[in-house]
Every structure is written in structure tokens, then in C-alpha cells.
Length: 226
Ligand SMILES: [Mg+2]
Image (cartoon, rainbow, N blue to C red; front, side):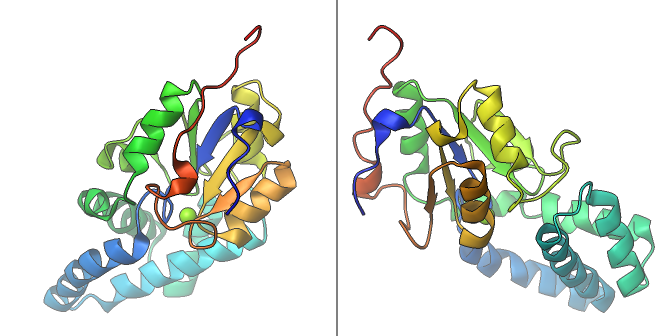
């Protein structure tokens, strides 16, 4: 991969799931816990709800439905026969809260160093996730200057819609072309970046880890008058 054109990059926006931590690693540790829970309670409905939530989420992203959160709950409730309250509780408990302790051990190597190097180079860091991101970022021990989620009322739409990327660029007073997007899914992060007019790196395609030479020696951002 050619060196990154840092002279044209004024800020970096990271996706969270699959980008800052490895989802395969997380699942290897977390799925046995879920399996034990399901077996001990004979709660197969839980698996059905989790699976339906994942599928519905993808369908709502593909359809670029906005806002999507209430429709997600309603669609999954209708599909599984569970109450909307139960679906919401499963979403919060099993997809957001319970995985938190498993995130740090699955962190992609080198990510702290890249965050530190970006900060030292005077480039702000944004995180944009399709799921609430603040707790996950804290669980990873990382700090960003701007944390956005598709569930935020002012965004209310998932990638590949570019609204979140455009909001981050606007927040920093930048054109999207000056915002480097780093994600893990070409059809979500890559397409959203393309539509916003932002350059993108895709983990799994352009790099695997943040300690690769691609991220070495991030030069300082030349400010006005420099
Ligand atoms: Mg991702």
C-alpha cells in the first residue's frame, strides 16, 4: 500500500466494531457465555431475537431507513413474537452491555499508538458507529474528540448513508475530502466514505493491524501560516 497522503488529511474518523477491536476474537470469547446462558435457561428465544436483530439491522442499513431504531424493535418483535420491551432489553443487554468486558482483549494491536500519534500530529479523532459507541470506546480505553452513533437523533441513519461522516467533517469545519475514514466493511464504511467524498482505508483489505508500517511516522499537520 502506498504511503498515506498525510498533507491532505486533517482529521481521522474511525468505525468501531471490527475496526478498533477484532470481532472474530470477541465472538470466540463471548459466544460460549451466550451458549451457556441459553442452555442453562433453555432460552432459545434469546438466540432467535439476537439473530433477528442482526438481520433487521442490516436490512434497515441497506434500505437507508431513518430513523431506524423504533422500526428495528418493531420488526424484530413482529418476526420473533417477543414483546417490544423484551427486544429492546435483549438489544441493550446482549448486544451492547454484556460484550463490554470482552472488547479490550480483542483490541486491534497498535490502535493506542495511532490515536496518540494522531493527537500529537494535531489531527482530531472521530468515532462513528452504527451502535452506541461511548461505552465501547471507554471499555477499549480509547478517547476520541468526537463520538457519533447512528442512533444519535441528529444522525438517525446507518452507513452506507454518509450523514454521519458529513456531520463529523462539519463538526471539525473540514471538507469530507480532508477526513480519512478507517473502517472494516467496504459495503458500509467504504461506500459511506465514497458518497461523502472522503478517502477510506478498510481493515481486512488495506491493513490488518495498526502497528503496520502504513501508520508509521504520522507527520504534524501544517497549520495556517506554517
Ligand atoms: Mg465495523
